[in-house]
Image 1 (cartoon, helix red, strand yellow):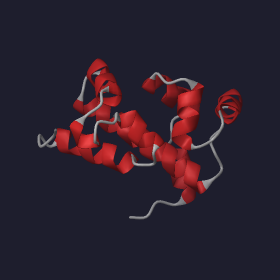
Image 2: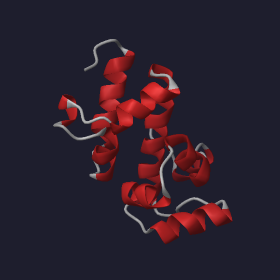
Image 3: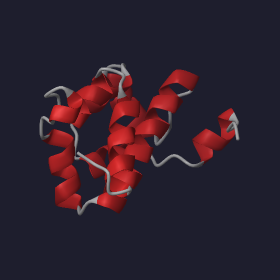
Image 4: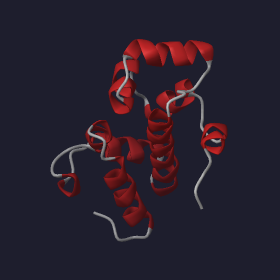
Amino acid sequence: MIMAFGDTRDRLLSMRKLRENLRLSRERMARMLDVSAKTIERWEERDSLPTSRTHLQRLSMIQEIVKLGLAVYSPEGFRQFLTTPLAVFDAHTALQLVELGQADRVLAALAADYEGLGH
């Protein structure tokens, strides 16, 4: 089922809540979304979300990673998953892959872990 643009916005956490769940700085979150840290700050101050479809899709993917990651791991285990370089990610961390626009690889690894087929 293809999700409508409005539906994506309705199911997203606030920018601040998502960033806090990931324990990321505004600068790191900005790199993940390919915007400036000032833009992240503005969205948080206004409690708003991006209007760009591309940014909303990236934000939605990041939220899916958080949701699945916390279903698979404890909060500390998920933090380790995000910040530890892994062979499955060619010695990159999950956060680095998201910054590189490869969030789908992170989501696939989490799905494999969820199914017990993981790294």
